[in-house]
Length: 422
Image 1 (cartoon, one colour):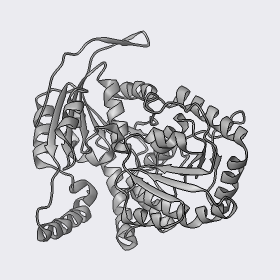
Image 2 (cartoon, one colour; image 1 turned 90 degrees about the vertical axis):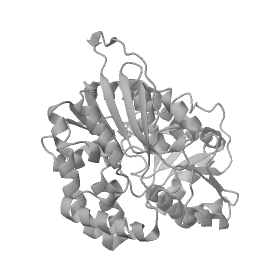
Image 3 (cartoon, helix red, strand yellow; image 1 turned 45 degrees about the horizontal axis):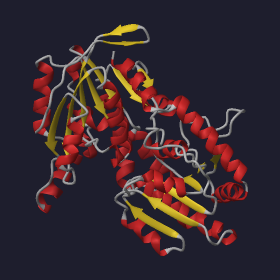
Image 4 (tube, helix red, strand yellow; image 1 turned 30 degrees about the horizontal axis):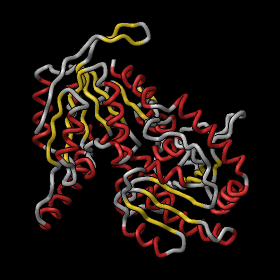
Protein backbone atom coordinates (compact mmCIF):
# COMPACT_ATOMS: atom_id res chain seq x y z
CA UNK A 1 0.00 0.00 0.00
CA UNK A 2 1.45 3.43 -0.92
CA UNK A 3 0.25 7.01 -0.57
CA UNK A 4 1.18 10.69 -0.69
CA UNK A 5 -0.67 13.90 0.26
CA UNK A 6 -0.97 17.48 -1.02
CA UNK A 7 -3.18 20.42 -0.05
CA UNK A 8 -6.43 21.49 -1.74
CA UNK A 9 -7.48 24.93 -2.98
CA UNK A 10 -10.57 27.00 -3.79
CA UNK A 11 -11.11 27.20 -7.55
CA UNK A 12 -13.35 29.16 -9.89
CA UNK A 13 -15.12 27.68 -12.88
CA UNK A 14 -17.28 29.78 -15.24
CA UNK A 15 -17.14 32.68 -12.75
CA UNK A 16 -18.79 30.50 -10.06
CA UNK A 17 -16.92 29.59 -6.88
CA UNK A 18 -16.54 25.83 -6.45
CA UNK A 19 -15.35 24.55 -3.11
CA UNK A 20 -12.57 22.02 -3.31
CA UNK A 21 -14.13 18.56 -2.96
CA UNK A 22 -12.68 15.45 -1.37
CA UNK A 23 -13.26 12.80 -4.04
CA UNK A 24 -12.76 9.08 -3.53
CA UNK A 25 -12.17 7.38 -6.90
CA UNK A 26 -12.36 3.58 -7.19
CA UNK A 27 -10.65 1.74 -10.03
CA UNK A 28 -9.89 -1.99 -9.98
CA UNK A 29 -7.97 -1.32 -13.21
CA UNK A 30 -4.58 0.27 -12.53
CA UNK A 31 -4.88 3.45 -14.63
CA UNK A 32 -1.23 4.14 -15.38
CA UNK A 33 0.30 4.56 -17.83
CA UNK A 34 -2.85 5.60 -19.73
CA UNK A 35 -1.63 3.62 -22.76
CA UNK A 36 -2.76 0.41 -21.00
CA UNK A 37 -6.19 0.53 -22.65
CA UNK A 38 -9.63 2.15 -22.82
CA UNK A 39 -10.55 1.90 -19.13
CA UNK A 40 -7.16 3.18 -18.03
CA UNK A 41 -7.22 6.05 -20.54
CA UNK A 42 -10.59 7.39 -19.38
CA UNK A 43 -9.88 6.93 -15.67
CA UNK A 44 -6.44 8.52 -15.79
CA UNK A 45 -7.46 11.58 -17.77
CA UNK A 46 -10.53 12.29 -15.63
CA UNK A 47 -8.57 11.98 -12.39
CA UNK A 48 -5.81 14.12 -13.89
CA UNK A 49 -8.32 16.89 -14.60
CA UNK A 50 -10.09 16.66 -11.23
CA UNK A 51 -6.80 16.64 -9.32
CA UNK A 52 -6.07 20.17 -10.51
CA UNK A 53 -8.98 21.50 -8.43
CA UNK A 54 -9.90 18.85 -5.87
CA UNK A 55 -8.39 16.44 -3.37
CA UNK A 56 -8.32 13.01 -5.00
CA UNK A 57 -7.96 9.74 -3.13
CA UNK A 58 -7.55 6.91 -5.63
CA UNK A 59 -8.02 3.31 -4.54
CA UNK A 60 -6.85 0.81 -7.14
CA UNK A 61 -5.44 -2.68 -7.67
CA UNK A 62 -2.16 -3.77 -9.18
CA UNK A 63 -1.60 -6.83 -11.29
CA UNK A 64 1.69 -8.69 -11.75
CA UNK A 65 2.94 -6.42 -14.54
CA UNK A 66 2.52 -3.12 -12.66
CA UNK A 67 5.96 -1.78 -11.74
CA UNK A 68 7.10 0.35 -8.82
CA UNK A 69 8.00 3.07 -11.34
CA UNK A 70 4.41 3.09 -12.60
CA UNK A 71 3.08 3.29 -9.05
CA UNK A 72 5.38 6.26 -8.41
CA UNK A 73 4.16 7.92 -11.61
CA UNK A 74 0.51 7.53 -10.62
CA UNK A 75 1.23 8.69 -7.05
CA UNK A 76 2.40 12.02 -8.44
CA UNK A 77 -0.99 12.55 -10.11
CA UNK A 78 -3.24 12.31 -7.03
CA UNK A 79 -3.31 13.42 -3.40
CA UNK A 80 -3.63 10.01 -1.82
CA UNK A 81 -2.92 6.74 -3.60
CA UNK A 82 -3.89 3.39 -2.09
CA UNK A 83 -2.85 0.24 -3.96
CA UNK A 84 -4.06 -3.29 -3.25
CA UNK A 85 -2.93 -6.49 -4.95
CA UNK A 86 -5.40 -7.97 -7.41
CA UNK A 87 -7.01 -11.12 -5.89
CA UNK A 88 -5.70 -14.35 -7.43
CA UNK A 89 -6.74 -18.01 -7.33
CA UNK A 90 -3.65 -19.89 -6.17
CA UNK A 91 -4.47 -23.47 -7.19
CA UNK A 92 -6.34 -25.08 -10.06
CA UNK A 93 -8.80 -26.78 -7.68
CA UNK A 94 -9.34 -23.46 -5.95
CA UNK A 95 -9.95 -21.74 -9.30
CA UNK A 96 -12.64 -24.23 -10.28
CA UNK A 97 -14.30 -24.05 -6.87
CA UNK A 98 -14.26 -20.27 -6.85
CA UNK A 99 -15.75 -20.12 -10.37
CA UNK A 100 -18.61 -22.33 -9.19
CA UNK A 101 -19.07 -20.19 -6.09
CA UNK A 102 -19.09 -16.97 -8.14
CA UNK A 103 -21.70 -18.31 -10.57
CA UNK A 104 -23.84 -19.49 -7.65
CA UNK A 105 -23.63 -16.00 -6.16
CA UNK A 106 -24.61 -14.53 -9.54
CA UNK A 107 -27.75 -16.69 -9.60
CA UNK A 108 -28.69 -15.97 -5.99
CA UNK A 109 -27.59 -12.37 -5.44
CA UNK A 110 -27.19 -11.00 -8.98
CA UNK A 111 -23.50 -10.01 -9.04
CA UNK A 112 -21.66 -11.34 -12.15
CA UNK A 113 -18.49 -13.47 -11.85
CA UNK A 114 -16.57 -10.77 -13.79
CA UNK A 115 -17.21 -8.42 -10.86
CA UNK A 116 -16.70 -10.97 -8.09
CA UNK A 117 -13.32 -12.20 -9.37
CA UNK A 118 -11.88 -8.71 -8.89
CA UNK A 119 -13.41 -8.21 -5.47
CA UNK A 120 -10.99 -7.55 -2.58
CA UNK A 121 -12.19 -7.93 1.01
CA UNK A 122 -9.27 -5.79 2.19
CA UNK A 123 -10.12 -3.06 -0.30
CA UNK A 124 -13.76 -3.13 0.83
CA UNK A 125 -12.78 -2.75 4.48
CA UNK A 126 -10.54 0.22 3.66
CA UNK A 127 -13.30 1.94 1.65
CA UNK A 128 -15.90 1.33 4.37
CA UNK A 129 -13.66 2.85 7.03
CA UNK A 130 -12.78 5.85 4.83
CA UNK A 131 -16.42 6.63 4.07
CA UNK A 132 -17.63 6.07 7.63
CA UNK A 133 -14.93 8.47 8.86
CA UNK A 134 -16.46 11.17 6.64
CA UNK A 135 -13.26 11.71 4.66
CA UNK A 136 -14.93 12.19 1.26
CA UNK A 137 -17.75 14.24 -0.25
CA UNK A 138 -18.07 12.21 -3.43
CA UNK A 139 -17.30 8.61 -4.39
CA UNK A 140 -16.86 7.66 -8.05
CA UNK A 141 -16.67 4.17 -9.54
CA UNK A 142 -14.46 4.30 -12.62
CA UNK A 143 -16.13 1.51 -14.59
CA UNK A 144 -19.21 -0.34 -13.39
CA UNK A 145 -17.13 -3.29 -12.15
CA UNK A 146 -16.27 -1.14 -9.10
CA UNK A 147 -19.91 -0.70 -8.07
CA UNK A 148 -19.57 -3.70 -5.72
CA UNK A 149 -17.64 -1.54 -3.24
CA UNK A 150 -20.44 1.01 -2.87
CA UNK A 151 -22.87 0.18 -0.06
CA UNK A 152 -26.52 1.11 -0.56
CA UNK A 153 -26.48 3.36 2.52
CA UNK A 154 -23.57 5.44 1.15
CA UNK A 155 -26.19 7.26 -0.92
CA UNK A 156 -27.55 8.85 2.26
CA UNK A 157 -24.12 10.12 3.33
CA UNK A 158 -22.51 11.48 0.16
CA UNK A 159 -22.81 11.77 -3.61
CA UNK A 160 -22.25 8.47 -5.40
CA UNK A 161 -21.32 8.27 -9.11
CA UNK A 162 -20.84 5.28 -11.38
CA UNK A 163 -18.91 5.94 -14.60
CA UNK A 164 -20.31 3.24 -16.90
CA UNK A 165 -17.92 2.68 -19.79
CA UNK A 166 -20.44 0.39 -21.49
CA UNK A 167 -23.60 -1.53 -20.59
CA UNK A 168 -22.70 -5.12 -19.66
CA UNK A 169 -26.20 -6.25 -20.60
CA UNK A 170 -26.04 -4.40 -23.92
CA UNK A 171 -22.60 -5.84 -24.75
CA UNK A 172 -23.68 -9.41 -23.96
CA UNK A 173 -26.85 -9.05 -26.02
CA UNK A 174 -24.86 -7.61 -28.94
CA UNK A 175 -22.31 -10.46 -28.88
CA UNK A 176 -25.07 -13.05 -28.88
CA UNK A 177 -26.87 -11.28 -31.74
CA UNK A 178 -23.88 -11.46 -34.12
CA UNK A 179 -22.60 -14.83 -32.94
CA UNK A 180 -19.23 -13.90 -31.42
CA UNK A 181 -19.93 -14.89 -27.83
CA UNK A 182 -17.15 -16.99 -26.31
CA UNK A 183 -19.79 -19.22 -24.72
CA UNK A 184 -23.25 -18.66 -26.18
CA UNK A 185 -25.05 -21.08 -23.83
CA UNK A 186 -23.55 -19.38 -20.79
CA UNK A 187 -24.35 -15.91 -22.13
CA UNK A 188 -27.97 -16.82 -22.94
CA UNK A 189 -28.35 -17.88 -19.31
CA UNK A 190 -26.54 -14.75 -18.14
CA UNK A 191 -28.47 -12.24 -20.24
CA UNK A 192 -31.58 -11.85 -18.03
CA UNK A 193 -29.33 -11.97 -14.96
CA UNK A 194 -27.22 -9.11 -16.35
CA UNK A 195 -30.34 -7.08 -16.99
CA UNK A 196 -31.40 -7.59 -13.36
CA UNK A 197 -27.89 -6.78 -12.16
CA UNK A 198 -27.62 -3.54 -14.12
CA UNK A 199 -31.00 -2.37 -12.91
CA UNK A 200 -30.15 -3.19 -9.29
CA UNK A 201 -26.69 -1.64 -9.01
CA UNK A 202 -27.68 1.60 -10.75
CA UNK A 203 -30.18 2.28 -7.95
CA UNK A 204 -27.25 2.82 -5.52
CA UNK A 205 -25.99 5.92 -7.33
CA UNK A 206 -26.87 9.61 -7.28
CA UNK A 207 -25.62 9.99 -10.85
CA UNK A 208 -24.91 7.55 -13.68
CA UNK A 209 -22.34 8.68 -16.26
CA UNK A 210 -22.21 7.09 -19.73
CA UNK A 211 -20.22 7.81 -22.89
CA UNK A 212 -22.98 7.87 -25.53
CA UNK A 213 -26.67 8.65 -25.97
CA UNK A 214 -27.22 5.00 -26.93
CA UNK A 215 -25.91 3.85 -23.56
CA UNK A 216 -28.11 6.45 -21.85
CA UNK A 217 -31.19 5.10 -23.60
CA UNK A 218 -30.18 1.54 -22.68
CA UNK A 219 -29.76 2.33 -18.97
CA UNK A 220 -32.73 4.71 -18.80
CA UNK A 221 -34.92 1.78 -19.85
CA UNK A 222 -33.92 -0.04 -16.65
CA UNK A 223 -33.76 3.05 -14.44
CA UNK A 224 -36.34 5.61 -15.65
CA UNK A 225 -35.91 7.83 -12.59
CA UNK A 226 -32.11 7.88 -12.52
CA UNK A 227 -30.01 10.95 -13.32
CA UNK A 228 -27.96 9.87 -16.35
CA UNK A 229 -25.30 12.16 -17.82
CA UNK A 230 -23.52 11.64 -21.13
CA UNK A 231 -19.80 12.45 -21.00
CA UNK A 232 -17.89 11.23 -24.09
CA UNK A 233 -14.26 10.17 -24.05
CA UNK A 234 -11.53 12.56 -25.09
CA UNK A 235 -8.06 12.62 -26.59
CA UNK A 236 -4.75 13.95 -25.30
CA UNK A 237 -3.82 16.22 -28.21
CA UNK A 238 -0.17 16.32 -27.12
CA UNK A 239 0.13 12.53 -27.21
CA UNK A 240 -1.80 12.35 -30.50
CA UNK A 241 -0.68 15.33 -32.61
CA UNK A 242 -2.07 15.89 -36.09
CA UNK A 243 0.22 14.47 -38.76
CA UNK A 244 1.91 16.92 -41.09
CA UNK A 245 1.98 14.79 -44.25
CA UNK A 246 -0.11 12.11 -45.94
CA UNK A 247 2.13 9.06 -46.52
CA UNK A 248 -0.05 7.79 -49.37
CA UNK A 249 0.34 4.14 -50.30
CA UNK A 250 -1.92 1.27 -49.30
CA UNK A 251 -1.20 0.81 -45.60
CA UNK A 252 -4.14 0.00 -43.30
CA UNK A 253 -4.05 0.01 -39.50
CA UNK A 254 -6.16 -1.09 -36.53
CA UNK A 255 -5.27 -0.03 -32.98
CA UNK A 256 -6.47 -1.34 -29.62
CA UNK A 257 -5.89 -3.86 -26.83
CA UNK A 258 -5.72 -7.14 -28.69
CA UNK A 259 -6.96 -9.41 -25.90
CA UNK A 260 -10.34 -7.63 -25.84
CA UNK A 261 -13.02 -9.81 -27.44
CA UNK A 262 -14.60 -7.04 -29.52
CA UNK A 263 -11.20 -6.07 -30.97
CA UNK A 264 -10.27 -9.69 -31.67
CA UNK A 265 -13.54 -10.16 -33.54
CA UNK A 266 -13.01 -6.92 -35.48
CA UNK A 267 -9.54 -7.78 -36.83
CA UNK A 268 -10.45 -11.41 -37.58
CA UNK A 269 -13.53 -10.29 -39.51
CA UNK A 270 -11.57 -7.68 -41.45
CA UNK A 271 -8.60 -9.98 -42.16
CA UNK A 272 -10.75 -12.86 -43.34
CA UNK A 273 -13.66 -11.14 -45.05
CA UNK A 274 -12.38 -7.77 -46.28
CA UNK A 275 -8.60 -7.64 -46.72
CA UNK A 276 -8.31 -10.42 -49.36
CA UNK A 277 -10.85 -8.59 -51.54
CA UNK A 278 -8.89 -5.33 -51.26
CA UNK A 279 -5.62 -7.08 -52.06
CA UNK A 280 -7.09 -8.36 -55.33
CA UNK A 281 -7.18 -4.76 -56.60
CA UNK A 282 -4.24 -3.45 -54.54
CA UNK A 283 -1.82 -6.39 -54.07
CA UNK A 284 0.66 -4.40 -51.96
CA UNK A 285 -1.93 -3.53 -49.30
CA UNK A 286 -0.68 -4.16 -45.75
CA UNK A 287 -2.60 -4.34 -42.49
CA UNK A 288 -0.91 -3.42 -39.17
CA UNK A 289 -2.68 -4.70 -36.04
CA UNK A 290 -1.20 -2.55 -33.28
CA UNK A 291 -1.93 -3.16 -29.60
CA UNK A 292 -0.90 -5.02 -26.47
CA UNK A 293 -1.49 -8.68 -25.53
CA UNK A 294 -2.54 -10.10 -28.92
CA UNK A 295 -4.72 -13.19 -28.47
CA UNK A 296 -3.72 -16.46 -30.20
CA UNK A 297 -6.36 -15.89 -32.91
CA UNK A 298 -4.79 -12.51 -33.64
CA UNK A 299 -1.22 -13.84 -33.74
CA UNK A 300 -2.37 -16.50 -36.20
CA UNK A 301 -3.42 -13.77 -38.65
CA UNK A 302 0.28 -13.08 -39.33
CA UNK A 303 0.24 -16.14 -41.57
CA UNK A 304 -1.88 -14.19 -44.04
CA UNK A 305 -0.20 -11.99 -46.69
CA UNK A 306 0.43 -8.39 -45.68
CA UNK A 307 -0.63 -8.68 -42.02
CA UNK A 308 1.69 -7.48 -39.26
CA UNK A 309 0.80 -8.01 -35.56
CA UNK A 310 3.01 -5.72 -33.48
CA UNK A 311 1.97 -6.31 -29.88
CA UNK A 312 2.51 -3.37 -27.53
CA UNK A 313 4.50 -0.51 -29.10
CA UNK A 314 6.30 2.46 -27.52
CA UNK A 315 4.34 5.00 -29.58
CA UNK A 316 0.93 4.30 -31.08
CA UNK A 317 0.88 7.65 -32.87
CA UNK A 318 4.03 6.80 -34.87
CA UNK A 319 2.22 3.84 -36.42
CA UNK A 320 -0.90 5.94 -37.03
CA UNK A 321 1.06 8.66 -38.84
CA UNK A 322 2.54 6.06 -41.22
CA UNK A 323 -0.86 4.59 -42.12
CA UNK A 324 -2.90 5.52 -45.18
CA UNK A 325 -6.22 4.62 -43.54
CA UNK A 326 -7.33 3.50 -40.09
CA UNK A 327 -10.09 0.87 -40.10
CA UNK A 328 -12.47 0.43 -37.15
CA UNK A 329 -14.51 -2.66 -38.15
CA UNK A 330 -16.17 -3.19 -34.74
CA UNK A 331 -19.21 -5.45 -34.70
CA UNK A 332 -19.90 -5.29 -30.98
CA UNK A 333 -19.09 -3.14 -27.92
CA UNK A 334 -20.97 -0.08 -26.75
CA UNK A 335 -19.66 3.44 -26.15
CA UNK A 336 -17.37 5.86 -27.93
CA UNK A 337 -14.18 4.13 -29.05
CA UNK A 338 -10.89 5.68 -27.94
CA UNK A 339 -9.22 4.12 -30.98
CA UNK A 340 -11.52 6.13 -33.27
CA UNK A 341 -10.92 9.41 -31.45
CA UNK A 342 -7.16 8.88 -31.34
CA UNK A 343 -6.93 8.14 -35.07
CA UNK A 344 -9.04 11.22 -35.82
CA UNK A 345 -6.78 13.36 -33.64
CA UNK A 346 -3.71 11.97 -35.42
CA UNK A 347 -5.18 13.01 -38.78
CA UNK A 348 -5.64 9.51 -40.19
CA UNK A 349 -8.73 9.06 -42.40
CA UNK A 350 -11.11 6.46 -41.01
CA UNK A 351 -13.36 3.78 -42.43
CA UNK A 352 -15.50 2.42 -39.61
CA UNK A 353 -18.66 0.52 -38.75
CA UNK A 354 -21.71 1.84 -36.95
CA UNK A 355 -20.22 0.46 -33.72
CA UNK A 356 -16.79 1.88 -34.49
CA UNK A 357 -18.23 5.36 -35.10
CA UNK A 358 -20.81 5.25 -32.30
CA UNK A 359 -21.43 8.55 -30.54
CA UNK A 360 -19.88 10.67 -33.31
CA UNK A 361 -21.53 12.96 -35.86
CA UNK A 362 -19.80 11.71 -38.98
CA UNK A 363 -21.76 13.79 -41.52
CA UNK A 364 -23.65 16.89 -40.38
CA UNK A 365 -24.44 18.00 -43.92
CA UNK A 366 -21.46 20.37 -43.96
CA UNK A 367 -18.47 18.25 -42.98
CA UNK A 368 -17.71 14.60 -43.72
CA UNK A 369 -15.40 13.20 -41.03
CA UNK A 370 -15.17 9.47 -41.84
CA UNK A 371 -16.55 6.86 -44.21
CA UNK A 372 -19.04 4.33 -42.87
CA UNK A 373 -19.04 0.61 -43.72
CA UNK A 374 -20.56 -2.50 -42.17
CA UNK A 375 -20.50 -5.18 -44.88
CA UNK A 376 -17.35 -6.40 -46.70
CA UNK A 377 -18.41 -4.82 -50.01
CA UNK A 378 -18.92 -1.47 -48.27
CA UNK A 379 -15.42 -1.62 -46.77
CA UNK A 380 -13.89 -2.46 -50.12
CA UNK A 381 -15.69 0.44 -51.83
CA UNK A 382 -14.81 2.98 -49.12
CA UNK A 383 -11.15 1.97 -48.81
CA UNK A 384 -10.70 1.90 -52.60
CA UNK A 385 -12.20 5.37 -52.81
CA UNK A 386 -9.71 6.71 -50.28
CA UNK A 387 -6.77 4.91 -51.88
CA UNK A 388 -7.60 6.62 -55.17
CA UNK A 389 -8.43 10.13 -53.91
CA UNK A 390 -5.80 11.90 -51.76
CA UNK A 391 -7.99 15.00 -51.68
CA UNK A 392 -10.74 13.05 -49.91
CA UNK A 393 -8.21 11.67 -47.43
CA UNK A 394 -7.12 15.23 -46.69
CA UNK A 395 -10.72 16.37 -46.28
CA UNK A 396 -11.57 13.60 -43.81
CA UNK A 397 -8.35 14.18 -41.87
CA UNK A 398 -8.90 17.92 -41.46
CA UNK A 399 -12.58 17.64 -40.59
CA UNK A 400 -12.00 14.85 -38.07
CA UNK A 401 -9.17 16.69 -36.33
CA UNK A 402 -11.35 19.81 -36.05
CA UNK A 403 -14.13 17.73 -34.47
CA UNK A 404 -11.73 16.36 -31.85
CA UNK A 405 -10.35 19.79 -31.00
CA UNK A 406 -13.79 21.32 -30.49
CA UNK A 407 -15.72 18.47 -28.85
CA UNK A 408 -13.54 15.60 -27.67
CA UNK A 409 -10.62 16.76 -25.54
CA UNK A 410 -10.08 15.47 -22.01
CA UNK A 411 -10.32 19.04 -20.77
CA UNK A 412 -13.91 19.21 -22.06
CA UNK A 413 -14.75 15.78 -20.60
CA UNK A 414 -13.13 16.71 -17.29
CA UNK A 415 -15.21 19.88 -16.93
CA UNK A 416 -18.41 17.91 -17.45
CA UNK A 417 -17.29 15.23 -14.99
CA UNK A 418 -16.54 17.89 -12.40
CA UNK A 419 -20.06 19.23 -12.80
CA UNK A 420 -21.45 15.72 -12.31
CA UNK A 421 -19.55 15.51 -9.01
CA UNK A 422 -21.02 18.72 -7.58
